[in-house]
Length: 433
Image (tube, rainbow, N blue to C red; front, side, top):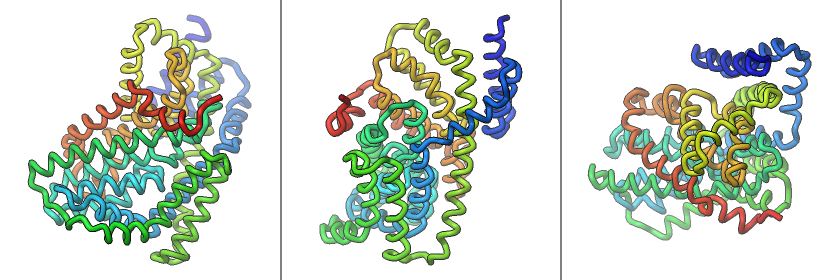
């Protein structure tokens, strides 16, 4: 067995063994990388150099700012305002609170960019409210968790920024625009399913449609929603970079939360920063270690080997895309989202590029798959939060989530095989030259 083959087995094998043994993902990545570097008789400085190089990027500065902005807005009363706006818009339908939940998640996801933050913020209000109105515990929780995936697709999404950094040369603005139609489409699909379930189970309607309530609620929540406008219009219009837009979003969120809404005291800002730093530290450690892991992958030419293997199995683009989606869904069930983006992107990008797929399109498919993984056992973070809020056991939630999984996979298939559904807006507003 030659050195390259054995090095590949050490890297991949040790990583998979540690994941199976439930090692923390950062330990699994770091130990397997260091062990492979030692076996290949390479200087250990390579490990440190690539870790530092992985986080020493200007684009990456957008990630902490987006995380802080989302935490500030989530803690500062914006979720209540978005729920009121959503209730005014769709609460009059049969199963109105389910529709409100989905639409509120769509709005809030555009601010937080996080599935777990969406579930924690919207879910803590909507799940008890839905249960009080006669909705099943499982249905109320499942609607909340499924709709939270919209936040990963609708801009701004710090996971899209991470993908852009790993992919290299991919426009963050085009990625943001590409997530819009899939995110909204997912919300509409979930609303349609929830509407029919509500008719079958005779869930209640809300108050009648009132234009005055819509206008009042829109006025009340407009300043919070304007955060999305700042980021998207600023980046797409070339007014400022993604990092600058994220920094401006933090300042805007700070002013609106503590000096306009004023629902929480200024002292709480330090708690928000502490929570943001805890999240950011995990993300940065993973990025640093995954950069070193990715360098070893490239040194061993694993991305090229994987691409050649997949393309040797079949030449059918349809089948290859099915294989990639299944692979990403399975990875999403057992690994952290950021880790998969950092590790899988360099491996799978050569495959999709040979298929003629735009890397922006692939980025949306990747994030969507991993979003489904967040609400799938055994390690779905959003699933654990939903269970903690509702008090329903994870096993029960996973079982009753099956219809929602089917709806989401249907949308995923549409996003995968209808490129225009993803690329229409970025090609129109930010065409490549």
